[in-house]
Image (cartoon, rainbow, N blue to C red; front, side, top):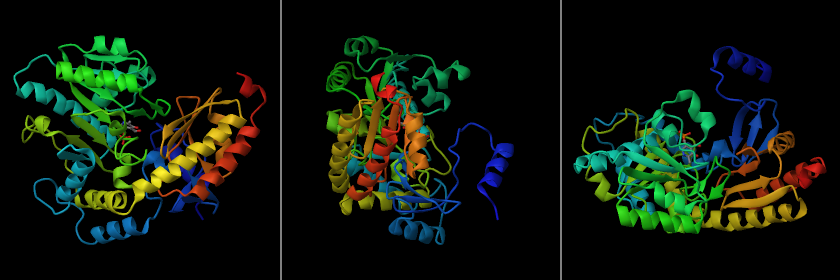
Length: 404
Ligand SMILES: Cc1ncc(COP(=O)(O)O)c(C=O)c1O
């Protein structure tokens, strides 16, 4: 029988070592639980980094994807099929942005938005309006374009030079932000809640400044909703909670429920400047991808999943605040809905490893943040179970951890 060691050593020999994996091999999932190769069960509070939002092996998603695989998977964008328009129409209802461009990942969605923003100015005969203003702690992907608007030097430096004309400003420096936007700025890129950056919502002051600057200068706004969007916070999109009116929105992760799907949502006045042949991808919006997206959107829009996220999200926050009150090492509880971060005073690695050892999957981001992105279908009982585990893990940290 193949063992975890066999699997790990085969990968060690043949898979490019770009990931530091946790030492566990998952073979099955159901709802909010995963099972490893030794038969051990885990409570999944990371859902494949915010992807499996209906939980694992969701009956409607499983049935739809299986049925689609037996009917027609792919035809390319040379032809029409019945599903792309339906998904785009639903995304338009949720976002207020009329048009979708479909792709296969969050990174590709950002890449598309960066191109569409430049195209918007170019088509109108404006030359030199090619720059971007983005924020420190932001993360928008690792392709050359999306990495160019990702702040972390650790990801950027080995691959420089990246695309020129990107200015990073601190999300806490509103005046600095206003000064950074010039007549060479094509677009501002913002994650309404910075995910990889530590589950940090941007401030109301910054949101107001972004709206002000865009209204004054006509600069386009790209909201990166790949992690915080599509119902995760109890809002369809978090830019709506902040009162932002983006021209372009990136979508990924949640939208396919585990099938790789991304989308750039585009307002009509930008869409008018984008012409046939400007952008494209072989797989984007194929039947498998859009069938899966349709199931996720139906659950969100027709079956009360967003209201469920609001209810369980409030419970989650209350329970995490109890932990913060009990353990001084927890400095803050951040996020909204089922997108949550515990800001610690110390490195989060022992908490992530301790939780894994007790059968709970969470993840470390921005060094000192324990990030949790459970499926939207998570129940209050699941949350209570996770809190019991986190409580035990935090209790086991060295006493000096809280004093730092
Ligand atoms: C906000 C944000 N933008 C972009 C990306 C990149 O998406 P993907 O990994 O699907 O290419 C991520 C992934 O973590 C993300 O969280």
